[in-house]
Every structure is written in C-alpha cells, then in structure tokens.
Length: 415
Image 1 (cartoon, rainbow, N blue to C red):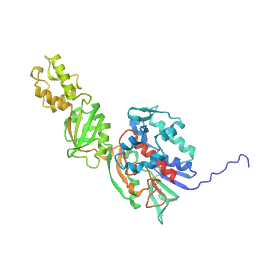
Image 2: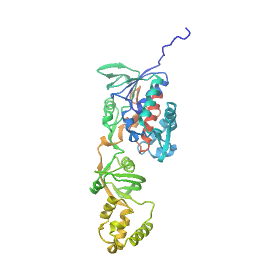
Image 3: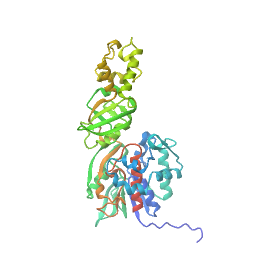
Image 4: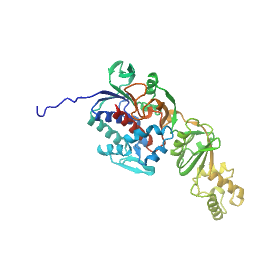
C-alpha cells in the first residue's frame, strides 16, 4: 500500500556493552549494516570519559600520516593495522562534519572541534546513533555474558537474561573510575576464558625521588627536552611541555614517557634540558653577558631573565650555587655547573601515580586472543572487543581516541 510504513527487517540482534567512544562507533556501524543494535551503559549518560578528553576540548584524533601514527603506538601497534585501514582519522572527521561539528588542526596535528567543546562531539555521536536506529539503555549495568556451545547467546542485566546474537564489549579499562571504567568488562572477559594482561597506568604522572619539585608545583615548562634512561640506556628523548607538581612531574612529555616505561617505572633516570635551543657554548656567552651587565647584583638578580624566579632558585640550588652571592664572587667552576644543570636538571622516578589518575590503561584483553581483522574473540563466536579493553595503548595527541574509533567501527562492521 502506497505510503505504508514498513517495519524494518533486522538480520541480527546485537548488544554493545559500554557507550563510550568505541562502543558508540561499534553500535553505529553495526546498525548501518541493518542489525538491531542496543547499547547498555551503566552510567546516566553516554561518553562520560569522552567528555573529559583533551581537558574538556576532546582531542578527536591526530591528522598525521600512517607511519607516524604507528610510531606513536608503543604497545602492540601491529594489531591495529586492519582497524585503522577500516576506519581512519579522516573517517571520524567526516562523521563529525556530517553531524554539524567542524574540526581544526592544532600543534602536533591534534584535531579538535572548532568550538573546543567535547559536548559537541557527544551530541554528534548521539545524533548519529539516533539516525541509524541504535537503541540506548542508560543506568543498565550488564552483569554477565552468556555463552552456550562456544557461542554468545545473550547477557544478564538487571538479573534477567536477554537474548542477543552477538556481543560487543566496550567497557574500557580501569583508569578514570569516576567515569565508570572500573574493570567489570575485563573481569567478565576473564571469566569467559580470555587472558587479561595485567593492568597498569599509561599516560600517568610520575612521582620523583627528589622532593624539591613540590616547591615548583604549578610551573609549566614549554619547549624543553626530557630525556630518560634505564640502566644507562636511553629509552626516551622528546621536546615539548612539562609540568611540576606537588609529587613530581606531569604534562605531555611525562605522560608519553610513562607509556614507554609503564612496565617498570621506578628507578628511571631523567634529565630536563631547560634550554634545548642553545648549545653550552651559546649559554656561556649569554651568562657572561648577563654577568657583565649586572656586576653589582646578586647571582639571582643577574640571571633573573633566564628562568622564572622559583625555577631559577631551584636550578641554582641543584648546581650548588648561592643565589645571594655577588656576581664578583661567581667563579668559572660555578658558571660551568650552572650551564650543566640548565642543560640537564636531574630527576629520578620513584613510581608512577595510581592507575586511577592515568588517562588510559596499559593491559587488558590479550591481542593474541582477538582476530585483528574483525575484533572477534578467537575463543568465543559472536563475542567482540574494542577500545581500551584491548591491550593496546598510545601516546597523547589523539591517538588513543582514534584507536577507540577504529577498533569500535571494525567490530561493528564485522558482526
């Protein structure tokens, strides 16, 4: 009959457990393939962790080329080849643009919404979910996944069994537990027979053995170089931004370093080059000029233009120089110690901060037990994993969120 509304015919009934970045993309892509898709999320709204990303601005992805992308994935990068081919950086940008969110590229190829509001990204995803027919169930924690004869057949939620043909797990890791990432999904995966690699914080601030850092708490250093060694072997060296805290150090450089040393952070030696653009010879010329121009001042007064006051005092202390001594008493040996300290403030990692303070989780479902081409479990038919549940993680800059988009989209398309 002309104009009659037809009831859609679904090929499968699918549940996505978790409504974060990976879960919503999985649901959207599965729904596009004609399936009846349900998201079950224990929170009162979708994407709680997504709301916090990029300090509330949502660093959507990174617009670098493919080789650079994988160089920013220190842990299990090869597992992601198929996922990134299936849903690349330009694909999430296109999805957002289509739903009214324009994007921009900032320093380091970081992609943000033009509005600088993560809420706009969440609205775009919600709109895409509605347009594709995804059904969302909030405040609905899933208690168990039911498997019979090696295949998924449903879930338990609210004490009731609900039949489903496939289950996509996207419950996240164990970082930022206030957003709902408290490890239930990993425990369910383990109960189902999957190997869950030990979880620890990645992209997490570091505590230092040195306590003087707390005196500099709140000071941000830009365009400095952080170098780190384990057993006299250099493991990290990058230029960027660093923040002193009441317990040690944080900021983009430190967070990336924490991913490199996540398995064994304690005892790592670090040095901060405060003047990476200047050689030691150029620094000496600068210091001699300052000394000559400030002959009647204290050492602190003479070098006041080199560093902020609190940082200058800390560096002079590390170099064993009296800041209140006179310029006339400042020796050549002291000058050289000052230069060496400026070019390498020494610090030692005591430990990483608790995993609850980490941006992402290292560890999770072993990638050896997941088909990289589909995100389906190799152990249980109809069970899929995506996002931070997987034992894959990357540096800061939008890479981890892209991993969530890509693995989620591939899982949804593969059902």
